Length: 418
Image 1 (cartoon, helix red, strand yellow):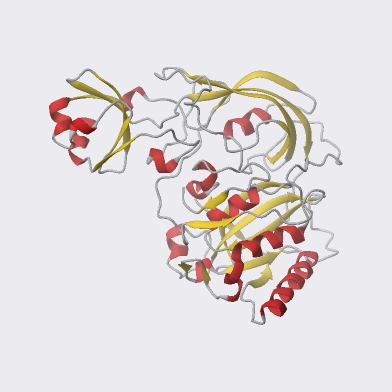
Image 2 (tube, helix red, strand yellow; image 1 turned 30 degrees about the horizontal axis):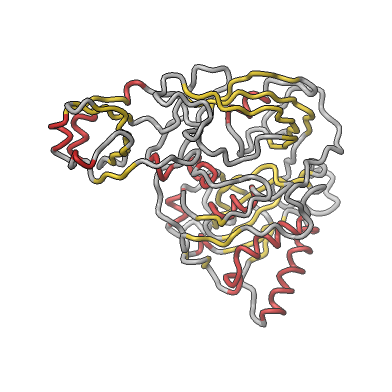
């Protein structure tokens, strides 16, 4: 209980309004939980981690061939059924309104207290169902709809899970004073405990303090109006296949690409921002161990590289533009082996893993151009795409969950920490 845990309090800092999914502010791992609404399922927030690489990564550059305002393509024919996992879903967001939190002292309502939403919330959008990005509750809502159907007033969990009343505690001033200088504590102060959990001071009468260990925006939700425009089959060819292979099903214009760019957090966010990219996952590839863990990959003994697998719409983004984005992020590191920024080791090697011979030819051309212009050997490996093992849930869309913008065309500097 908190009364015992407070003896392990280590530090105090004043609470600042957090960005959405801010792991660095919350400092706690929030479990996926149900909410008292129809479409729930909180995001699994990442716990505080060590800054990777040099901490401050390069800004995103949108390569030629894409436009920040490029709308999703709609040249396909819609399947006349509800979408299933892996399908490409095109939908129109007509309203995405914050509705506050039941039981939250602040009341929500979308004012200054409301977290910044780091993804696009209006217009026609696309995603791969259960393929990451956006809110899990939005995926759940879309899975219940048919093409042409409009839903109004649906309540979607904002991604922080339900508020847990058991995480709200009262402690006496004398007990709290054993761990911290209470003269420095006021309503809004965040107290960090030795077990890594943070709690916010929500009230005091001078003799007792009320501490809330819930995530800052637990219980918050959005009211959504949307139309499901189209459902199409997504790609299923996750590894390399030869041209002319009649057994390879490539999902039409929706295509898979895989890149290794060092620590996968920053690279994933860069691709999330790119128009035409409709799904991203991070994971491990090119190794010899089946289904490795993060700790095993970091040991350097499994042969895997940290990698990003994306699904993109060829009508909006070309494969060349994807490769250029990755090489731009690597910069001079393309000439270095097993190193990106300050991250070193075989797991941080950089590579382009092609899924077909067209991708191989495009990548070869760009790598040869870099070798010629730099007068040095390019160390970025070029290999056939092999089995891709999903990284742990807390790694998926890590920087988006930390509040950094994944809006299409966003150019804010990507910080390679939560």
